[in-house]
Length: 547
Figure 1 (tube, one colour):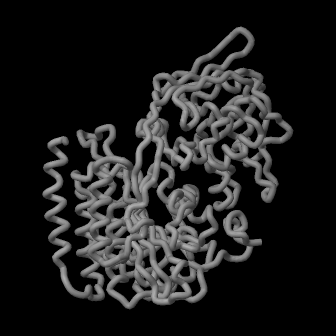
Figure 2 (spheres, rainbow, N blue to C red; figure 1 turned 120 degrees about the vertical axis):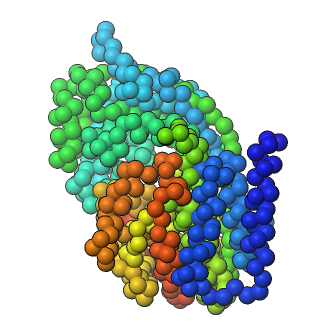
């Protein structure tokens, strides 16, 4: 056993023992008490000892052990099956060999090879260690068919046995909800597989690269990716018929269009106008790569607070936040630990403080399932597993409230609720905010389609009304620029080692936020009618059975 593991155990034991010595009934907490609790939990979870809480790592196991101990201390029932707080999940971890990537464009007797890493990235399908395919290439715009918006990038092109070349994202002219849905890789891969494509090359648009420069794309790709494994060992949602996948920076796309009669600039301009486009590229592409595979197991941590109404015993409100972060990675200014303090140690601290307040009573009518989820940073995988494999006692999830990456670098009393416009949860958010001294601001970055990028979306895809609550950008103090704070965080700290405990953190705001979250969850859990999709909502129609 490594010496470092032996060294960590006494530290964890002492901290948990100190917390477990609190005896007697837990009183109802106020904002100051909530602040102290959130700070205590987050200080532990974002410490270097957790090594960034990467899914499947020792640091994540320590963090999961901590949350398990807290759920037990609060008197929550084990939320997973077989009397456990831990819901086991099987994953397949993939580490791509970037230097082995191949993307060669052939026309007649000539060929042009794009340079791995500098120009492109390529990998085999999930679950495969190596792949190389050679096939004719067709361009299908964004790879989107949205009949309700009159948009079809596929036209009459036959994709059978071909490599599809697509642009990242979806037309900016689409409403935010549709743009979010049609931008997702899952949606595009489903469409390509249905049309017989055998590979996909995604060209990043200039707009997408302005938001996430190529260097960041490459750096992110160096972290191992993960997929869920089904009980039979197959990769969940792996689209194995898309045998190879590539990503190309927009400045390197010219060889793909050299024999199509169109230039990349013309293609990007057409895309910017939101016009469908599909044409044969007149070239053959060889696409391939290698990857290392490693099966591993990790856990969601689930704590169950029974409700007071027996008729609602199987319909919990599920409160989620991701416990994982990026783990250890490339050093930045000598720091290789990606602590994830805002993203999302503080969020888990808020959930634990919220659980303590709700457990103190009185019990809400509906049960509440508190879920510290794994593998959010790997594609919402822990949430997907919970949403599609709920514990046996769950008949249906009444609603999901997700807490992720609220920003507390400045005093803040403003809420943003991504997804509020889709269900009756939105009205409850506004009522809870008004009752606890918060305002509710608008989505301040609609272009980022945040609603599909955190754990609540895994529940949405199973038809569960959900809302993602975070902090907003409006301030009552003209000296506090929350918009600048968000911009500074996203540019300078998001998914970087300096998202740690050394950054400015206004801890009293975390306590006030916990009071708001408590008000919201109690209102949802005490409402005899479960939250519902609003009539005519896009996601309600897509996943919730609404017309």
